[in-house]
Length: 202
Image (tube, rainbow, N blue to C red):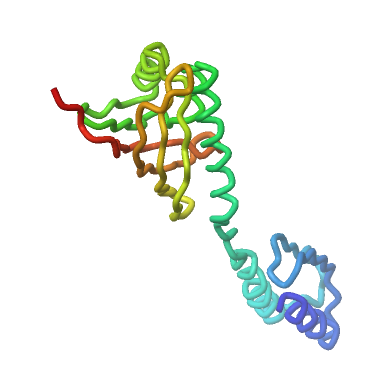
């Protein structure tokens, strides 16, 4: 489209005897950049010709803004979140509560465990994770069931298993979490889970 209009532009000026200095830089049918350098001192450039030129330039430059936005790649986001889950497991296994909170949770994340008020904010989550690891939790395994969403947030449904030192399974359950991008990384913005284990009886 840009090339076609540019040819019309040249044809008009050559057929009318006007020889302005013109330079056009086009990138594809939808130009990212386009420049017209015109010798306005050319004695043949009449007001009528100038108005016509401005109309043509106006039409062609509208193509600059017609580039389609980059399409969100859910498949790629899923891969990044799967990697983030593996890092989650790694930080628990190595006992690194600082990296766990910093790299896995957004600054204003909510950690919503059963039978407790929500733990709000990365610093509070780091304190909680340190206490959990110190209490003997040595491993948490995450298994994704499904993910859906867009660039504004990804929801993940999955199951989890909790182990203590010695490899003993002490809890298993399910989770529903909301991932949000922060500093170019997918991080947990809301973390909600509960147990499948029967409640302990006295």
